[in-house]
Length: 153
Image (cartoon, rainbow, N blue to C red; front, side):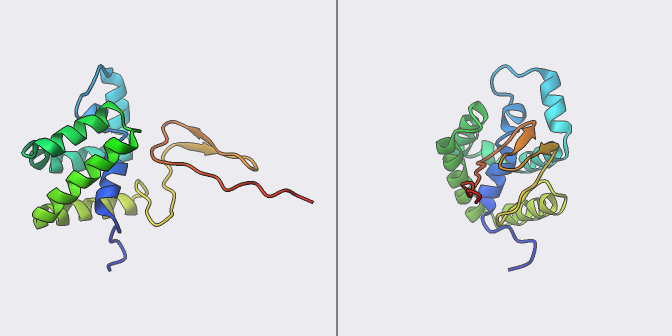
């Protein structure tokens, strides 16, 4: 496996795209300024480029388009994210050229600090923490968990 290889391409795609799909698909009533602000971030730029590459293939597959719309409607819905991940797996298994392009885009996102894999953390924006806590200003995508605090003394 190459050093920049993403272990689960579909999961990485969903993680990167999910927070931005409401703006990329224009689902619901989103303000234009929020869309501009979200897509102007480095992560937003990566997500937009990835979505533009996937879009023709997604639109050609109704099940994949529906799964993407479901994630756009609720980016935190784990079932919707899982359905999109499954549809992307099927899509990428059938299209080696698309898979190669997506893997390259994800590797670039990982190198630029937008995407973390293998237990890593990618931070875009402000994160502040004191002992036993974590503070985030902005949006958190995915799951955040902290181990139980050890009792002192």
